[in-house]
Length: 439
View 1 (spheres, one colour):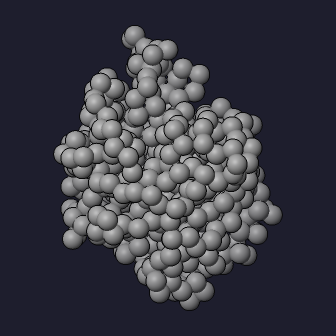
View 2 (cartoon, one colour):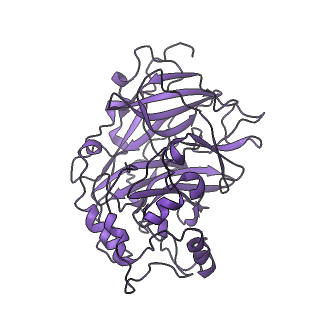
View 3 (tube, one colour):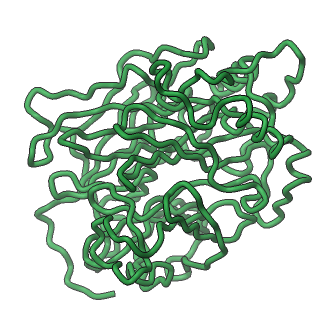
């Protein structure tokens, strides 16, 4: 995971000479390089000029700077995050012995779904970019096909990431179709750095269905300049060499994506906003909450707001974003989470799960006395910021959970051996007894 104290790629801001050339700033560039018919929504001279004027302290994205980011990523090592293992957080042993009936999980590996990336993508930037590690993916099923969006990094948990896409045909029962295999998108990377606030990488996709379209939120990583730090001080959440923006792209088919750019300004985020955690139901629909129609979790309510639980940045204060269309967001401080029941320090809210029975569950990544841990917090969908209960154990699915074949499912790549680009799928046991307890 990228942290606020990350000092990688500090050299990316040092190259300011006139011989550097910008990448993909013309009106014909696309998010996924799929041809001239898929123009980016945020490009063109006027949009570029407006963006530069609003953030004059951003280091311009150039090929030379992208090459520096790649060189530094290839020697990156982080022993702490590199040792993460999924079942530490998601196996039965990670949950309370008296697990409440609202908790989602525990999970076991289903090898029938394992995704392995063979070969290397073509590098549209001509840098010699390659990936060693896959992780933090997001799933959504659509018309009998499972779509997988995943982060690919030069090294595990390094900067310089890109986002890939793959598909798998399913049976009506939600199992891999006979003879079906994963198909990696020939347009990969479907999202790569093309904007100044993506210079250090595009990370951690989260995909949602809403408003008749598909929405892909992701993190754009950029180097912090002294000018930026002076313009937007963050004493409550110190930001050092690296900043992060929340960005969004839209699609009508899950194949062609148009970038719309950041959704929050630096005046509020203080140069760091990570994790576009929007409540999502079992089908991958973003769900409006807090209105009179809240309760079913079918993603079709026309009252309430789309909510986003922000747990990093914003000067160290928990915020909730609200939107009527998933494109335009307003953020306000809301103390929606209390970890005192399990102890420790919050790192990030990973996912928000609408379970279909009037409940909202937040999946939370934190530590207890310096040891990484997962917990889940319970809310009512009609009162989605008033915490009702807390329990240990969780998925830490940064891309959200989806029910596949009636089983809550997510994927993660932390446990892939070094040199293997695998994503393992973790699913709930449909035959496991559910404790009959109440929050």
